[in-house]
Length: 305
Image (tube, rainbow, N blue to C red; front, side, top):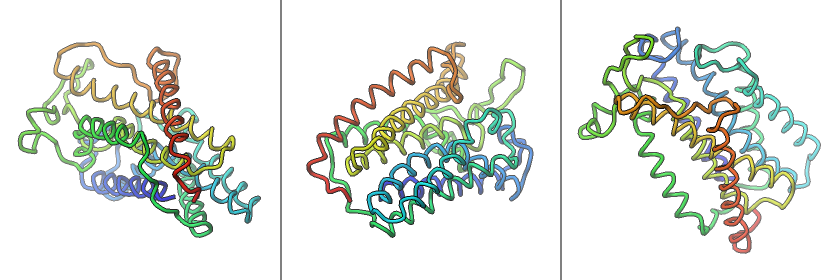
C-alpha cells in the first residue's frame, strides 16, 4: 500500500502545482483555458483530476480492493464501492469529457474527480484494515525502473517547470539544452512559446509512467487472481501509453519547433487506429512480460502484506 499512497501523494502535489500556476498566470499565457484567478485554478485542477489522475487511480483501486478482499471483512461493501469508483473514474474515456481544445471544467468532469476521491478513501480503508505493509524489497527490475524514470524525467523537465509557471530557459545552462520561451509560429500563423506555461500531456504521460513503475512493485504482494493479472496488463499499457504521450509532446516541442523536421510523432491521447497506437500495444505487451518475470522472481522474498 505504500506505493499507492506515494502515487496519490504525487498526484496531489501536482494538483497543487496546477492550482497555483493556473490561479496566478493569465489565461492568455496558458493553453486552451479562459478563466483566470482562483476560479481558473480550481477549474483546471478538476480537469486534471479526471485526466490523467483518474487513470492512475484505477490502478490504485485494484491494489486497495485486493487488500480489502484479502482481509475477508465487508467484502460486498468493498466490491460495491470499488465498482462505483471504477465507473466514476472510467467516465474519463467518454468522448468529449476532456477536450484538448477546451480545458475549462464542466460538471461532467466532477464524476471522474469524485471517483478519484473515492479511490483515495478505499485506499485509506484498506490501510486501516490490513496495514500498509513493509517496504517492498529490491527486485531484479529495480535498476531498470530507476534508469527509465531518470531518462524520462530529463526529457520531461521543461514540463515540470511549465507546471510551476517557469520557463526552463530561465534556469542557467538548461536554456542551452531545452527550448521553452522561444517564440514559434504555428502552421495557422499563431505565435506562442515553444513550451507554454501550465500542464502538458507529456507531463501527464510522465506521471502515468511513474505510477506504473511504482505500482508494478506491488504486484508481487497481490494474490494470484484475475484482478492481479488485469492490473499487470493495465499497468503495462499505462506505462506504454505514458511513454507515447511523452514521445509525442517532446518530439514536437524540442525537434519540430526547432525546424529540424516537419514530421511529428502521432498523438496518442485518445485510442485510434494508427501505427503509433499499434506501437503502444506492442510496447505494452513487452512491458507486461518484463514486470511479470520480475514479480515471479521476487515472489519468494516478499511477504503478502
